[in-house]
Length: 262
Image (cartoon, rainbow, N blue to C red):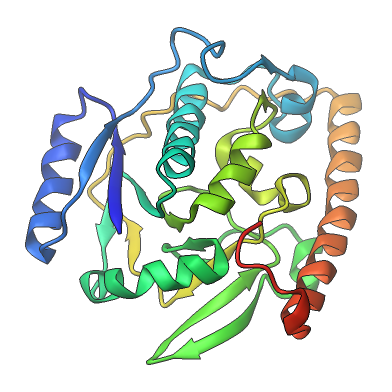
């Protein structure tokens, strides 16, 4: 499978470390020059829905780095569609785990079946209400590794493999920017792409990585009315997520309804 590493052209230290790790495991890859986002969104998105962005983040405007990060992933999804090829997409602050090179040959058939396979940990911080249900369900186990359906996808887009069908669905749902890319991926009921994860993971966040290149995202609204609206927005989303999860469970239990691509 073709591997792209998203990296700012100026991030020489990160690029050197990424190249070192890839060379050690014998994997071929290319850098994708990350979009910086300082020129705005018009080249990639028809508009920014600032109201929905605020409900998703408590911030009304995305940082340039958030626009650039989303646009970088979107550009690679469109590449997968245009070339009708699956991709492994990594951000440049990765740490390859043992087994990465061995799994590369097995990823393509997995992506052909599941569409989107997360390669980093499927665990992350969870809100109290979300802890009432499991975040993932095992759907396959083979040779010491398993594939899990993510009913509560965690944040971060550090590492995943994606097929052209899933890439097309995500691209079509991305004409309007209404959330950072990782929060967009969490909202499966909107883009209609079921997300899966490999366990144990074969990529993790590098402990040597410094500060995020996205920029400051700490200035959030504390307006009580906005926070109440956000809570209602999240609750409505959880109901829609449950409905999407039930549909996916029905497809997995009924072979006649399974789909290889969204």
